[in-house]
Amino acid sequence: MSDYLSLLAQLRNIDSQRRNLDGIRRAREQIQALYEAGRRPLGDLDRARQNELGAENALLNANNRLESALDSLKELLGLPMSAVIELDPAGRLGKWLSTSD
Image 1 (cartoon, rainbow, N blue to C red):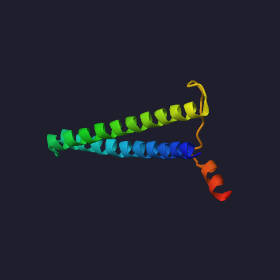
Image 2: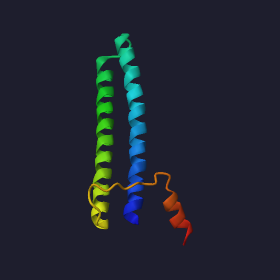
Image 3: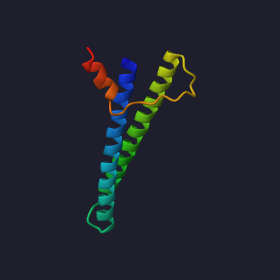
Image 4: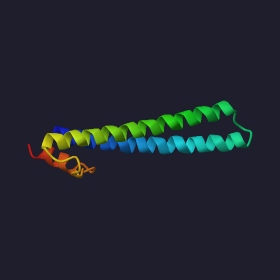
């Protein structure tokens, strides 16, 4: 069960990484507009682009970790790799487990 709850935590991490990327992307777009208007130096734009690339990489890594964890869970359960595991991102299962003690 802890493997499943770990997967849910990874889903939350992916959501967080996605929101982070969205914010960084908006900041880069704003800095780019200011740079194009001559109000920000190129170095600021370069740093913003690097931040955006780092956030994209973090999101890709989080997705890869989730896929790997899903494959490990399938292996643990004896399921074929083609099996689909539906996660409960709202955490209803985890809430049920914590109240059933």
